[in-house]
Image 1 (cartoon, rainbow, N blue to C red):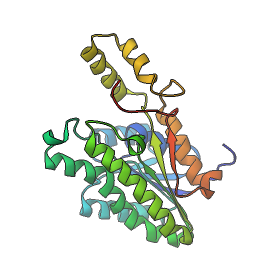
Image 2: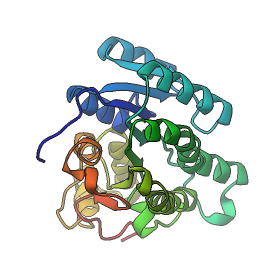
Image 3: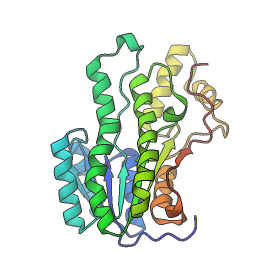
Image 4: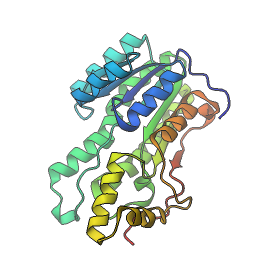
Length: 261
């Protein structure tokens, strides 16, 4: 991907103690960045302190205004400034028809997936400006490009992330801050395996048959890995991608549809 200039960069990753967030935090740390993460899961934070002592973890609910204000202030103070913000936090939300979705579930999904980015970014911008510029990377989804039936709160929130990204890129560009979104496709891991197992049970097929049907909706006929998403985040924040802004970049093998067969 060309020359990476991450050494000494000060990086914050939300929901960074497990999954894609942890892969992103580790990718930056491996390039010499100093990384602080927040997470709500105490077990994941405890495991992180043992496995990755160089990555500093904080407990915070990303949808809680006061909690995020404290986390951002503490992390920026400990880092002595900020160069990169990765808004990674998100949740799947309910799977149901609109008439069966509780308003509380709708609100919680939008709060975690979209409000969290507003809360973190508004506290990050003054520090990024003080640093002479920087990079913001927002985690969206191919669901924010295609939509997906029965996942209305999730898809709506991810479309919102794309709008937030494009608008902030225009607003913050004159101050030297790039803003981009990454749109992952189906990511290898336990969550995808659960989805495929449930789909196989529903269809009366094997998991292997369910996987084959699943990837037929992807041009490259493959899922992606958390590390591939992390590599894109590093590229946008530290590599030649620093001149990219206002873009929604799909890392998905070209998912063609998220609808039913």
